[in-house]
Amino acid sequence: MVSSPRTGRKKQTDMDLPDEVTEAIAEVGGLGELASHIPSPAELEHQLSIHHALSDKTRLKILWAVKYCDLCPCVLKEFLKISDSRLSYHLSALEDAGLLSSYPKKNWKIYSITDLGKDALGCGRLA
Figure 1 (tube, rainbow, N blue to C red):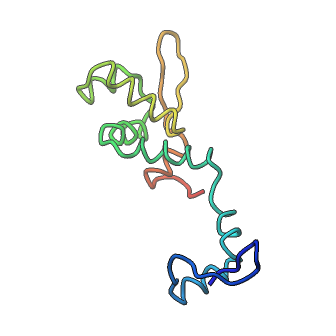
Figure 2: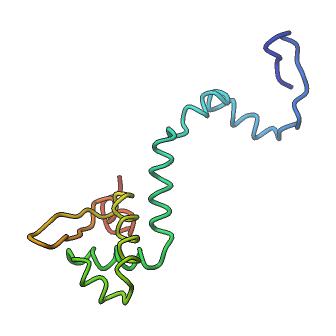
């Protein structure tokens, strides 16, 4: 039963919750308090981009390779045997998720793994 905000009377909810669920919700301070622990939409989007980046075998191979040494796209392309456009797509996804970073070196773009990338592979410190 839930109290109606208009009448103050108890009304039947669409479903009766198991006692342990009702108790658990009460222990966290109610549904409002539970909702306050959900990350912001921006943080959820960031988490989504990380999970998306990690959901592809090619991107995982890139992360593992770059974990051992900074690499340029030409080496990754040869290593992975993929096209420029496909490699560019994967590198962008990893960089957008914050798992890789890049820096220019003369005419080259060099990729390195971030602390978040190391954490994602289970190799870094836990945040």
